[in-house]
Image 1 (tube, helix red, strand yellow):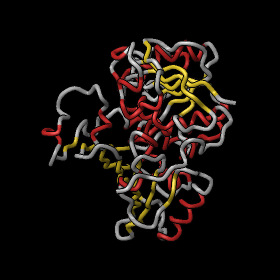
Image 2 (cartoon, helix red, strand yellow):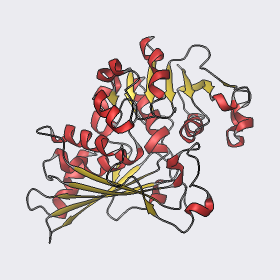
Image 3 (tube, rainbow, N blue to C red):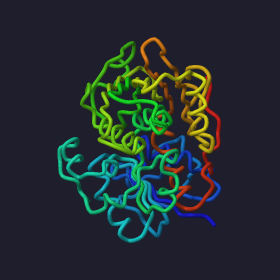
Image 4 (cartoon, one colour):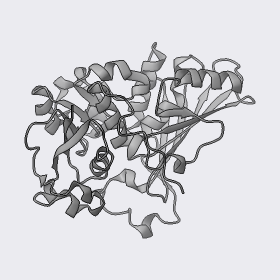
Length: 342
């Protein structure tokens, strides 16, 4: 059986990356793509790297019947277009942030406007299979994690679930320029970002409550952990690098921590615990997250590093992984490819 996939906003980086990855999917095919600014053009004409799609039209709205929809609309605009599909029984993966936070008040606080579809929040499942695989498989609406949170949560999840760490937690993270999206406006030209590193939204980024919320789920008791999150923009196209610091609750060796991590991820096809600090380029173009935990014995701290491609495991690849689980397909379908190196 071949499932019919619609992509809303194929003209953004996440949408076009989903189209690239789905080309070789063994059980799914794209039948409709939208993009209002380029409506009326052929997908392959608008984006020559997708020329294999031939005569597939970019339309203002999804046309024809689809089994699943991937929405790559901007945050706060995505819920509005997703809601009719959810209500009609079509499976939806939202790559934006609209359904990640469980409380509508939190959405309004961090995004500055009321949630467009608060009645759907109780049904939304946070789309990180390493933590929520079973519930994703039963879901009709999945909230794809943000790229920074996916990296940070995966770096810390085994230690948090095992009760090895407490808070406050500090996440120092770096992202490539593509994380800003195609429609991000000024400040991201070559001359702006080349030979430059800068922090932004310091301790006030909307990914902060998402990280805290999901680490709280893993901890399972008490309030959500306190998380200080500082993102940085670095002059590369793709990649997320997160270095996470958390106080240890007891003395533990590096060998014990590695055993905890490897046991936690032993059935996770797209998260690998590595022996040396990973590079972002080790995940370029694929759906892998690489994690490296270290024990700072002098100061009783866990230092956990995570890297992934922000457009794949941090967006479109993660969405397809979630789609596979929702449709009862092999989790790795269409995603089992190596990274591009160098």
